[in-house]
Image (cartoon, rainbow, N blue to C red; front, top):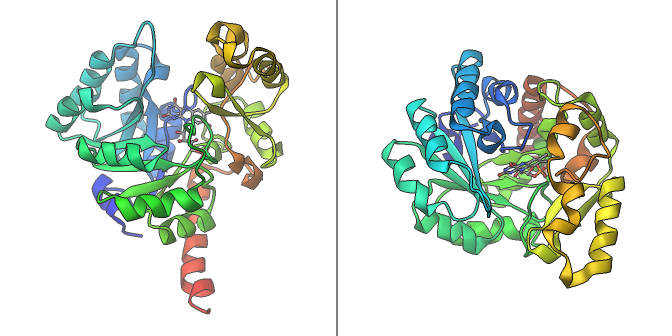
Length: 322
Ligand SMILES: Cc1cc2nc3c(=O)[nH]c(=O)nc-3n(C[C@H](O)[C@H](O)[C@H](O)COP(=O)(O)O)c2cc1C
């Protein structure tokens, strides 16, 4: 399938794996790229520029296809060494960067000068237009359904994607709630040039996370996610568990007085415990409503092949016969 996104990134299928903290290591990124999509290493998870360089080198050993690095710009008292991370990305010749979080304008000139394509992930039409204005090549439009940070507007993809299509000139992919060939065809009907998936890719044999995490996603329904940290304007969609229930109790009790320090036990430093040790009650971790559509743990290759053949079947049989 050829779209503006496959052309832009030099990939076979219009399917992207979004950056995921403590999930987006070389194994997953390479598996997605080898299967014809665009895999993504999560920059901040690596910790230092040297470790990121090492992870990029590992990924290059596992694939000769294009892959991306995610750079998430978060408000932080001690910001990560973004210039150092970007230098390693440029020196290693990584062809695509997925930016997310704050406006990446400050870092765009260095990336663009190096010939890197930039896809910015954002949750609103106005942020997508801003990304277009500052020179991003594409955007990943993340609807209210998404795992992780859906923003504060709460606009689901059935509205957000056609709104983006009406306003944007650069190509965009649909992100949030995407799982299969139906998602891909639906997203493209609404104006997207492909799709980005997070949660679905965690429940694959290639995702380098504990089996408990994959099973938690398979066992979850679309009713099992919760929105937390809204009063901090840092809303996150997470899978419900004991820690999340505790966190929400604190949110209810403290209301607008809630500070990050009040919930630090439930949110800080929990990813390694969950993703690598499989301690599922350790804290709040991002997960999309799409968990309700995830019922198996295939290889990435089988997942992507299945998505493309289902999409083909829908376009060439089901829709054609109406
Ligand atoms: C466990 C997990 C961790 C994530 N970490 C990041 C991250 O560090 N940076 C980022 O830009 N997006 C992150 N995301 C968001 C994904 O890249 C993607 O946009 C989102 O999962 C799409 O929604 P879906 O889960 O419904 O597919 C994360 C998502 C999950 C599920």
